[in-house]
Image (cartoon, rainbow, N blue to C red; front, side, top):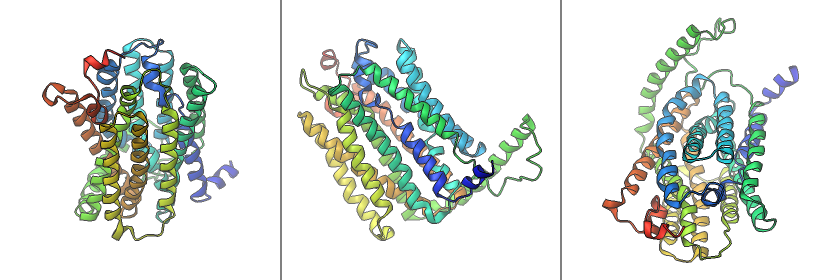
Length: 419
């Protein structure tokens, strides 16, 4: 026990290392790049239209309504339980994908995936509760790079298993479940923060060690949470009054909305672009895109640049490049050009979101960061839910199939019947 306490007190290195291992394992999901082929395959036998209309939109709507309660629970439970809950939700998601049958089981797995995504606020804000502010830029880049490297490794592994060893898509699900069990075990070794970040000034620990977790204790904790939330909301008004701070928050919200919307439907778009009898390279493309994004994320963490001066210019230039790659995916009929556009989009986005995150974090105190991150995530999910609802209303928009593949869900029945 003494050795364990020494490890927890080592500073920023130990919690960052454990969190990065967890982030890597939680993203080791080789089944994800081939999720649409698995759902449309003989084991599940869903149509592309069912996936785009009845399954995928549920993620956008449920994630929106889960963010607020998950944010409040994040500080009340002091971060680590939320990370453990994320691991459990991911595991439940892929167990339902693999063993469930029927539309309801897939929808339930999408809901579990939404719970896991809502827990991202716990993963990305946990580290700020246990390290000093001087380490924010570095630990931000490490935590995000670990996630990207895990996803890249999973994508590359899935491509090799499918293309070379002809492994079935169900076996990819088994490997995914095994890795998620490892992530769950790793999350248990995270040091427990001594107190919540958001409500540091409102937690009165005198006598709390002797209290049992009764209903009265939890009611008092909820009351402190509500008082602390009101107090910090007033403080956050000063931060959002800064034009530079507001700029980075708006870009983070809108950029995340676009990223989720594009990555959610990219596999469907690829399926529509692929020629007949074409070998899919979903995993390989995802691996290349994610590795380049991880490299860019780490590079940002070690770049000595006056971001307060050049940050807005960098966001503007690279945002234009990212938007151009998305339009290229929409306009082209060549699957390889579509792959290249996705690689450019994802790698550029990962670099820019890292810049935004540490620019936001470095101007905030610990008790404010989790709230701002939660607000930005909620704004992103609200925009995505609105965009999903609008895109699905194709009677008024009359979008082409490829345009819907980039902006939302493809729903042209004449073309979808082929699949």
